[in-house]
Amino acid sequence: MAPRRRSRNTANLPPNLYIVAGKYYQYRRPTDGKRFGMGTDKARAVAAAQQLNSMLVSLPGAESAVERATRPDTLLMRDFIKHYYEKLLPKRKLAEKSQKMHHWKRKYIAEALGNYSVDEIDVRDVAKFLGGYPPTTSNQYRALLVDIFRHAVAEGYCRENPAELTIPQIGEKRRKRMTVEQYQAIHAASALWLQNAMDLALLTLQRRGDVVAMRWENVREGALYVIQEKTKKHDTGYLRIIIGPELDAVIKRCRDSVPSPFLVHRRPITQHKAQRDALEHWTQVRGDFLQKAFAKVRDSLPELANMTAEERPTFHEIRALGIKLYRDAGQNPQHLAGHAQERMTKNYEAGHDEIRWVEAVASGLTLPLKTTV
Image (cartoon, rainbow, N blue to C red; front, side, top):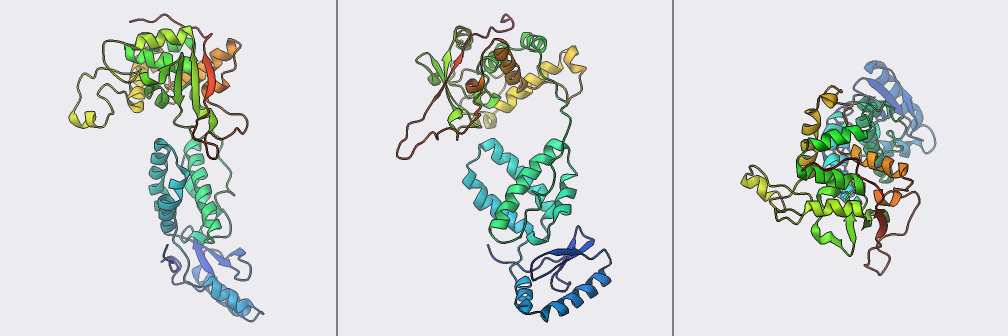
């Protein structure tokens, strides 16, 4: 990254004086980097900074500190964000969905903080930005900013991580857990392909992205092999699910007259060429389409449509319902859900390419309804 001079917000200020949030002035003592508030009056802040600079230069060794503080190596936040997204984030090898979410947030962080130099941004700047979002979104932005500033500190562009000094917001959970009765109602009103998806999610405890990715080639030797998209970097993300009688019945129901490599599939009513080209197979069901189809059926039911939008259960709540039902049946759903409670050995050990599949059993849980075809 090419070094940058002070931002346009601080270019006309004396050395070591900075403006925060567009109106507050801070003086950074060049000998140790400690900051002092100078109020909102520019003339007074400038006069005080000039006097302090003059006094500090007379101290032994302070002149070199001032020179270091005013050298042209200050980097604008928008440039460091660009560096983070292009050079640092790809090394984390995030799932495609997580990458899209990160890049979506990039725009708003750059708009709010991009014109500040990295070392100008303090806790108040970050707190003000985070305060403009509801708790869940705010905490997502906070986690991202913590990581961005962690790299900035490591590369010497700032002394501390201002995002880490903020406190995560605590929000009240408004979404309601799905009940068996709600599951039954939505299931009965759904098309067969959506029923299959719901039952697979309930019995295997997999997320919607992993449910729609299940292929016939992954059903073999009495087991369903699943590589979880979200946790495939860990041992728990590689599952060999032993097929019990309940899951076997659902899998057999998935094999219909429509030829498809996917267990969950559908014959589209209409499909444009652009839509078809975006799919691996013309019968494929994407995760976002599954969620929309589920929500459409859910919202058509009076007992669920009367709930607020924030309270209505999503497809993801099937996973939570399944975990509860397995526990009620006296079984531990940890491995089936792909959760790890302690550190486990890596999937790929040094010098070996063999994946360690975590074996789990999908059996002993009776579907809470009879399938309506």
